[in-house]
Length: 202
Image (tube, rainbow, N blue to C red):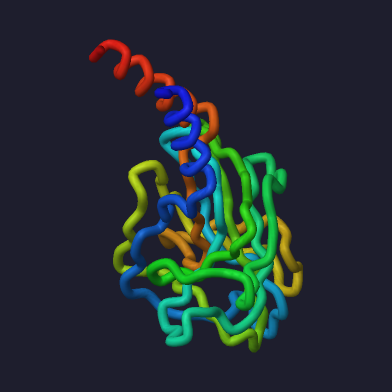
């Protein structure tokens, strides 16, 4: 019975939206694109993680919306330090949910992230899409598992969803956010630990 309960708990955990990597963004300036007259800039930030996690959903800042949705569809990507694209998709205003100040895609990412690696997440912003990111915020709240490094932007305009190779001096460009849960192996260990503790208490 204990094993059945643990397995059910792990399934429920994997199917949940999970915790937000970025919990709050205060202050800063809003921009729709980075390069002048660009029609597609991949904007975001680099980060590391303190434990093995699995990205469930990817979203973007939507703090000024009153209808709980973004205005346009936006492609997104997550890369590792070798510029390998680990996961990508599209945040669709017709297929998502609002959580805090962010609007998330309903489709699951599934990217597994681990300590010791630097990751980059970016959302594609186009001129006239009526959605904006925030640069140089006065403060940013994060989940304990996530460490922000710096903002990123592309080397030129109109490049589309490519690895944003330029580092900016500010903390981040928000932009992107993601939900996560413990990676399957980590969650399994937690479940097994719970089973062992339960047996010891008997």
